[in-house]
Image (cartoon, rainbow, N blue to C red; front, side):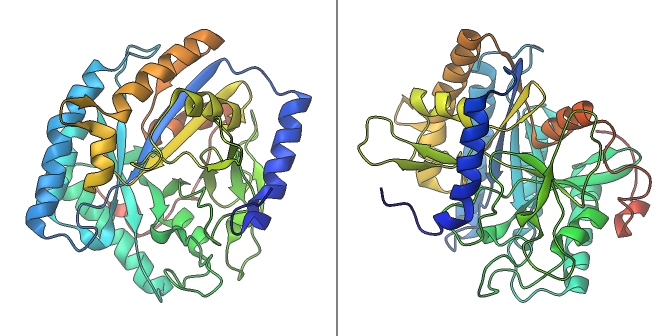
Length: 363
């Protein structure tokens, strides 16, 4: 069997995870589901007019899909997490996302594409962007008295993880994110990129060696009552192989897209691969939903239902079949659910930063 490029990075971890799974893990009692969108309305060199049309389509269609979805065990609708790129900030593109956030069906977190970055430049960019999100749009969350954010790295190159140093350049990014107020990173998996980490299908703490890139290659798995055990919490999506009637397997990495839409088989595979903390399971999916081809697949087009509508129904049916309580979650909700299991995370002054002086107040 021919494995995908760079499988040497993740396949040993996948093999260990499958072995552990076969030996038995606690039967999950609850499933948390979060969709983390690398939401880039200006991607593919789009004009501002095209970007506005892309956002308007989501503002029109997503509330309908969320309202039609099965309610979870807490009688909540799905909540979509838009990880918006810092370098593409435009107030008119954020305002509709903020409106969906106020409706309780959306949330906005931090995304960035950068190259040849410096620590000073990164601190300034993230700090200024978070201030804008909070002060101009009422976004981001307060946690234990300070503002925090979730993070996805553009081009997957978290912590200077590309061997050629492109698309980041900033070794030590994990520690900077921690100090700036990042509550968790949601970048992985990134198969088949060489940026892919060696730890798969776990929620874990980065314990990389200071001064070396790709600190998320080493870590300690989050555990019930374990609290903070490293620099930054990594919430990863499902990663592995699936066959689905194929002779040769396809890589599963929790991405929903026009060329890999949700299916009932994928839903079942996600529940087999997703990480657990104790008897609670965490399914983090990702997409690039602003571009038209993926938006067609997710939202529907020409009167045909989109993949999101079907996926929510299949997840509800599968969790009912397995006797698992279903919870829809934003990225922040998922972090809070992990913290409820592990005990208080980032205690004391771990999240001190330039952001500490920002206006407080829960949304």
